[in-house]
Amino acid sequence: MNILESMKDKLLVADGAFGTCYVGTYGEQGTVAPELANMRHPERVLEIHKEYVKAGAGLIRTNTFAANTASLDADMDYVISNVRAAVKIAKEAAEVDRKKIYIAGDIGPIPADAGLTLSERVMQYKLLGETMQDMGVDIVWFETFPEFNVLETVVKHLKERKDTPVMVSFCVNQFGYSNCGFSARALLSQAAGNPDVDCVGFNCGVGPYHMLQLMKKLDMDCGKPVSIMPNAGYPKFTQSRLVFNDNKEGFIDKIQDIVALGADIVGGCCGTNPEYIEQITSRVVSGDIVKTSKVHVERQQAAGGEKDNFLRDRQKHGGVDSKKSETHKLIAVELAPPVDVNDQKLLDAAHILKQSHVDVVTFPDSPSGRTRADSILMAEKVHKETGLRVMPHLCCRDKNAIAIRGSVLGAQLNGIKDFLVITGDPVPVMFRQTTRSVFNFDSVGMMKLLQSMNEEVFNGDEITYGGAVNQNRMNTKFEVDRIKRKMEAGAEFFLTQPVFSREQAQILRDMKAETGAAILVGVMPLVSRRNALFMKNEMAGIEIPDDIIERYGENATRQEGEDCGIQIAREILEYTNDFADGYYFSFPFNRVHMLAHIVD
Image (tube, rainbow, N blue to C red):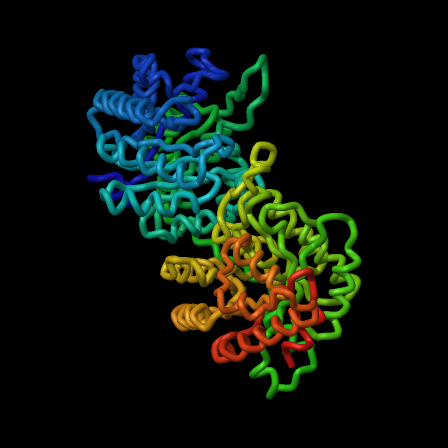
């Protein structure tokens, strides 16, 4: 009987903490990772595992939570050897009992400040999982993660390689949010809804009381076995070490209530030890703790009308009659925030756009990794001074999930409910010694965060967000897949890179046909030959054919340059009219007066 079959009608009791138990027993702490003991002191690791088996644990986790190159300050070869040693020790400990003891290969998150890229972390997770599969663990357990996005490709890879069950458990605080800003409900939904994940759960972060309160709000009947592993309580910092109070009585009482909600696996995290697990198993044996049917919790939907956003704003509030609203092309115009404290030119441009009746004005978030005034604060000022609908860009480069959530909350409180979500340009090479990118996640990950906020925070007063499309990407299939993923994450519209040819337009036409996405075609009316050459050679993602550049005279006047840009923009509108839901204008140097000469 494999581990999944065993949980169909039986509660599985897991072990308790290994790290805090090891430190409490052997006094090693600080820079010494307990995982190093797998090769330095295997007898210590074996003894702790045996104590948990003796206490009645039916599942023990390998001593590999922090077995990664960053935490062990070692190369991958050493880490793999360490993991193999850990699995061997756990198997040896399991053999001391006649009953079946399941082995979980434990994988914790690689520290965010380790300096590893997302792809490097994903590769390590894959290698760790592969090693555990090959060593014959009963389940690969990704434990204490603050997000699921980083694991999506990992679990898919592992399940395609071998059919070893995979579990993902998350760490949230007493308010129900992870360090990456995701709610417990969103994390449970994402993991349980993934076909490559066999078990889901929560561990660490909170004590048994808060864990119980959180579980009461969640739907334990999520279609997958659920594991709940709270801490013993909350630690105190004493004599340069974290100390947990003895809370066995309170812990066991809350575990009993958690099981009553439908948990399939229970055990302990930080601060727990074999005594805690012995108390649980004795209560299970005596019949005081019995596996029950899962409690189903219905979501309460707040009353509210149709979500208002700039896609519907013109039809609802702009005075357009029904016949025109059917064919109206949405108009979005980008205004670049200033690089200093002089915003007069931007405000002048905004007032011109107010007279042009544009649908929304967008504000880039320090494009190209060069500092400009904050996009949300700039949007708020323009909105207050002009009444224009505004849409700041949000990029993942400069802020972690906590800061992004805070920014979105502040924006919504000030009436800003439309956002363009992008991954963001990297920091320029010359600044990387003093400025580091964050990239907690990419644009799809941020959209999932906003999707969660709409469900958990803005219920009844949701925000709207869209994404970017790069039709110039070599791999158009990849871009189409990204569009679909963004739509699944709640994106309602897409703004494209500037179009400069019928070939680029056809790519977008095909993308719209395949995805059904609402697309605002990018239009950039270049104003001179010099401007065209700069955009072609210096701006990533923008493709300008030579025949467009040749249309600008080398010695043309300012007016002649603008006239040429206006004419080219009109042509682009004409050959994209059949599929474009609207247009996204980006005027060099904020020359928005050209808009009136381009659109009717």
